[in-house]
Length: 264
Image 1: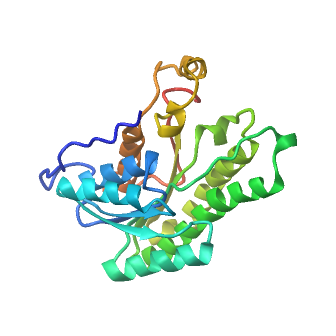
Image 2 (image 1 turned 60 degrees about the horizontal axis):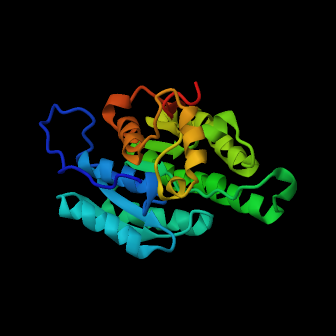
């Protein structure tokens, strides 16, 4: 199961690495899984975290309450990234109210699996609308704010499936591969404004979804991972925190793999 427990908020010295104190970070799809873990890690590094959710306010509230209980700063914002205009307006309002927006983690995504000949056109469209157009809408809104500040971090969450492919996941693989192209294009477009754009491609990560897989399937997947285990959401969150930090200021257009060696 995903380890959602987090240590006490880190309050290191001014020289501590990966310090995000004073930064505002928006994480889409942050009510569970990798998004939740990322919000927690960014808050531990000192960022004020804005937790986006679509429908499960109770789960999102639990994340925010947990961060606040450990001394961090967190709040909620509701919107569906697939509703591009609505999402962009909501993000603009967050930036205006908080006075800044330094980090956007475009994490929200869905997977509707099935062999190509059985895949419905509407399902394919839904996956692309959320995973690609929704991610781009989130980035666009963030970039508008970051251009004025002449600094910022856009971090897309892709997947090992976008690099390696997988049987029965044509729509998902297409959407996650598209994100890698988007990352490189935006990195070139906005480097002159000191905005870095990077992607993280998680491998087989513990989550509510993967915990429900039959044991034989889990064993087969883990057997394909050189490190011999699943990853955790917090390990992905740590990679995202690095890319969001000043220490990663000379990294852009990069795909950071967090997959235990599953794909190299």
